[in-house]
Image (cartoon, rainbow, N blue to C red; front, side, top):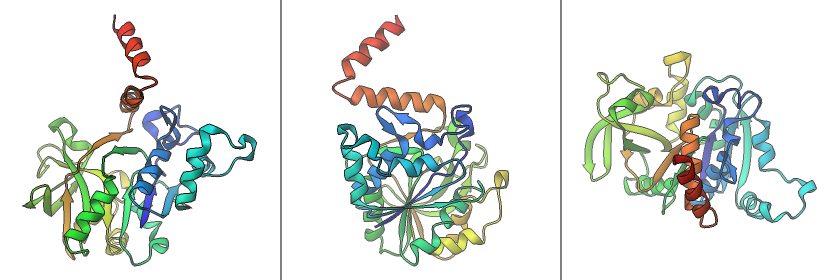
Length: 279
């Protein structure tokens, strides 16, 4: 299974912290966001992972490299095992031109087979790994149609997402008829927001190449999906699990708190700290 992880964004909402450090390297509890994403891909069965990076993103490659100065450090054993479970490849997006442009950087590597996409700044906690859920739906639906993860979003968040609409053909599965990137509330055809996890057919690469720059001059994957709809079905599916979008400092802080509360060694101390601060 091949999975592409775009991790080339500028991280402007985290400045000045991300001036020289990739936002994907921000820690959530005891490891960087990007490591969670790679772990998620491997847990789903990925054995070939391409990470799309950019200028000032070398730290992402270093995270998955061997560091002899640490030796056999206990804290790194799980990471060492992870890097042996899948081949990791890295390619640079030369300019930050949007998610669609980042995904098409993997076209030659992916070739003519379906592939997964997980965002480098989003963590999913699912009993069945999300990419496995999407792949299984892909197979159930005939292995010829792209499948994207969606969830219902509030009215106040509609303009932060790509929004899709269509006909529900079975519980939790929508045959997509339209997709629009970050619409206004009045423009939104539904409240189903694309969460940033995809299982795509390789036809999408040609669609991305034909997609004109959209909002902020970027090539949006949502706009490419609109072209893809003219050639094949695209299905939007809801999923079982929790998504953590580490898109801004407040969301990052929330993720850290919730992950700490899930840790049995830290839970009581964190609760005591929160109660103390609240008082």
